[in-house]
Image 1 (cartoon, rainbow, N blue to C red):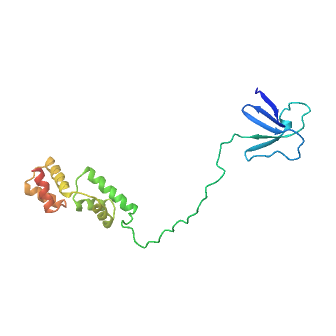
Image 2 (tube, one colour):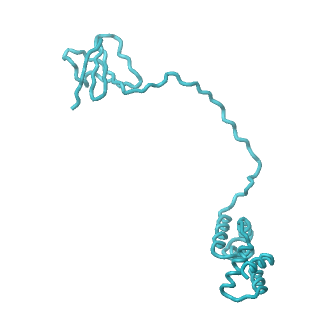
Image 3 (cartoon, rainbow, N blue to C red):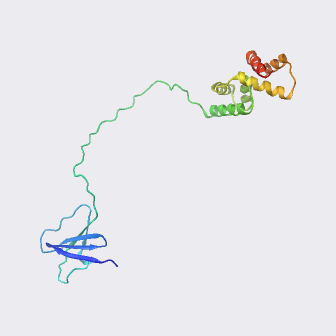
Length: 189
C-alpha cells in the first residue's frame, strides 16, 4: 500500500502518492484552475480528502516534464531541385537474366576446365544459349587464353604422349590460335 502525504499550502492542496504529485486549488474561487498540456484532470471524489468538510475540487495531476525551449527555430522551406531529364543512354547496357546466366556458366566452366574462346562459346551453345549471348558472355570475361592453352596442354600430356608439333595441332583443333597453342606447349614441354 502506498502512503499518501497531503498538505494545504496557500490555498492549494498538495498530495504526494507514489512519486506522483497532485495539486488542487482549495477555496471558492470562480475561476477554474489552469491546466498545462501535460496534465490530467480528475474530481476530488477519486482522491481521499484531508478533512470531511473539504469542498469538492478539481485536481490536476501533472506528468513529469522536461525543460523544452519555448521558441522554435524558424524553418525555411527551400524547394528541392527537380532532376533533369537525361536523354543519354547508360554507359553500360543492361544485362538480361539469360546473359547473366551465360556469364555465370562460362565462369563455372573455366573454374574446372581449360577452354579456348571458341571452345567455350561452343560449350555454352551446347547448353542451349544462343550464339550471340554465348559470345557476349565469353567476351565479357577477362580470360588469358594463353594460360588456358597451357592448362589444356598439361592435361593432354598427363594422359597421352604427344610430339611438340602434334600437341600444337591438337590445341589448334581445340580452338586456340596458333600463338596461344605455341605458348601453351612451350609452358609444358
